[in-house]
Picture 1 (cartoon, rainbow, N blue to C red):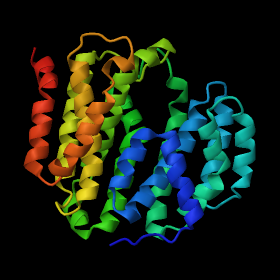
Picture 2 (picture 1 turned 180 degrees about the vertical axis):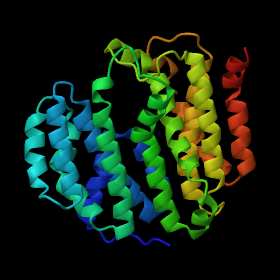
Picture 3 (picture 1 turned 90 degrees about the vertical axis):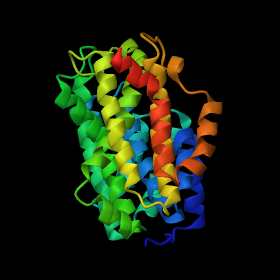
Length: 324
């Protein structure tokens, strides 16, 4: 079993506060985890958010992004002083990100102090995730066109480097915490990738109107919305299989995963009910729905049957759209 990490109270207070500032969703789900895992996964999210902030800066050249990403990776891996990353990054991103994101970058030393307090295996799993995500995003930088990605394999590769690898990282950390889960997931690690990809495909479909408006499509060429809905639905099934492998007594981990999965099912069902939508907000879940489902997971996460029944009932619009 993993132990609560001995980070300073001030550093942990910062991590908790900035997490709530840069992501309301993850500020809601991460505290569901056991305390030791909450610290690790919260820290990993912030590291990934720094990568996202660099990649999403609209006026930075690919060369500038590569340089900053390289400096950041070196800081994470302890190959270079963190100050060598923070100062040039803040200069490069001045005016290109919100105040909370700039604050996060300015406090990279705090985030990395927490990271370097983790055990060797945890650091290795997180470093691998950060490196694959960072390098992967840079590979896809020049593919941001309205034409979309070349084909389905490239689409799945993109979903892997931005989300599937997160599923792998979560699995590694969960397995360190729970020997029973480590035994259950052995030989079925591909389900972790499907879990991450399911969530990313949902986001791609939901955000497609805004992406299109800025001249970008992350969909594969030649695939209709309905065809992509079918692929996402298959990935959701893999995600459900993944959650069932988590021991029933690990309620916090189950709630963390099922909350993400259930919200994805509800979102895809809203998309399936519409032949067209012009804004992501058109299929965004109301806050009341999110909170109701949040409390529902208190009961549902304890039962494979209840979780599966929810996915079956809530996912009926998806099945109906695919059938029709």
